[in-house]
Amino acid sequence: MASVVEYKGLKAGYHCGYCDSEEGKVSCGMWAHSMTVQDYQDLIDRGWRRSGKYVYKPVMNQTCCPQYTIRCRPLQFQPSKSHKKVLKKMLKFLAKGEISKGNYEDDPMEPTMEDTVAGDFGLINKLDIQCDLKTLSGDLTESFDSEEKKKGKSPKKGESNEFIQSQDIEEKLGSGEPSHPVKMPMAPKPGKGADLSKPPCRKAKEIRKERKRLKLMQQNPAGELEGFQAQGEPPSLLPPKANKSNQPKSLEDLIFESLPENASHKLEVRLVPVSFEDPEFKSSFSRSFSLYVKYQMAIHQDPPDECGKTEFTRFLCSSPLEAENPPNGPDCGYGSFHQQYWLDGRIIAVGVIDILPYCVSSVYLYYDPDYSFLSLGVYSALREIAFTRQLHQKTSQLSYYYMGFYIHSCPKMKYKGQYRPSDLLCPETYVWVPIEQCLPSLENSKYCRFNRDPEAVDEGRSKDPDRLQVFHKKAIMPYGVYKKQQKDPGEEAAVLQYARLVGQTCSERMLLFRN
Image 1 (cartoon, helix red, strand yellow):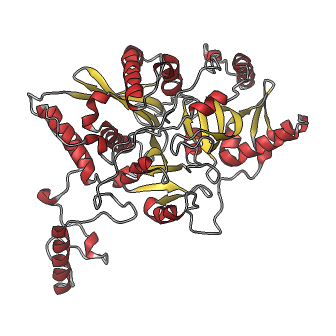
Image 2: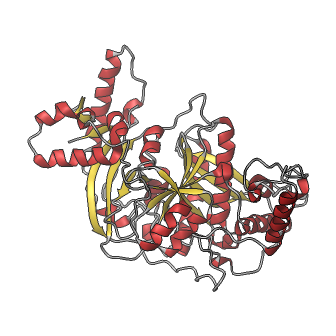
Image 3: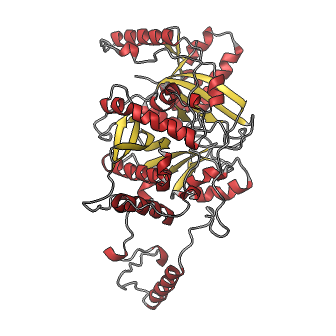
């Protein structure tokens, strides 16, 4: 099935939940009636992101708080000192029921406001999603049926309903962004704040060891000392020979450390496909929904009428992504999932994720505020990084963890830069640049082009818009044919804007619905 999208154009001048500007936010968006995982992968690699079925892209050089797509490289990931603290805290709690002292709420690594998909209540309320969805569904089915007949296939039963059931347009989509200002975490104490533009500081003991090692290397230039292999690399980069006592524990060792038989608590993480046809998703829905309401009201101060079942379903249970199960893909398949954290038989957190051809993409997290002392925001991110590594073992190209948007101008969103190594997406050429190279520029300017090559261009740009696929009046046609039937000059501008933002590959694969 092809992706079917309806481009909504540019929306400017609406409320920003990051800086609280009343009308500073600018983005372009489209309604995705259905979308393949490959198309969504290609779109997020061009700075797009989904909120429910609404897929949007900030206009980076105009919006008040530029949102840079950030991805972590799990295969090289090493947990930091504060990450290890969170994992040990969880193990102590599970083993002995110990609740560590200390002000966990001010943990600089704990997001007090998941930006996740910044779905923008305001914007989606204003959105004029007025295509007749029932008609669209019928038209699409008809056109696909005729395409199938041409190929000599009979359409599958029930496929006509696969597009969209008519939804009440007036209802709001939920949002990862707060509708009210959120309490800021306290600033780190002087001298304790992590300066992301500097390399992590090392202990004096490590520096002394380093000096000793250098001295030994100079005394023995052949590099035949035990534990050294001189390969023309600076000695500081040479690991000593594998020796269990000095090997740092891996992320998996820290997460899956064995618990005593008489452990106080039992934690189980279940991966459930986002589908009302899935028995596990269906049976846990009401518990998951109650948790969402508790979280939104306590953490985001949402009034009860803004976190109803409709908002929850539209925002976190409706996904345009078509589930796919190719033989070379992960065992769980591709698509949208809820990763449920069950503690002693009750759900205490749910991570909403998309599993795509090259990455696990984090969409949202909601958790029980009574368990804030476990730093569940950090804990779940570390579990998702470990999960990506696990999927990579079978599906080698699946090797990144996308964390949504990094907003350097918003102090409470900078915690994402602590999961290293990570890269930011250049907003002009769509290449990935290590975050360390980006931070000095971001200190000087909110909006930056990260690609240092001034000659570099967007390689995936729309070069031949006439080949873009349009779905119009029950027929699929290239834009070159469609434009001959159009007299409205605004129509061409809208289609070309869409083509520029999605790039040539997606414009040829996805069907752009025009009314």
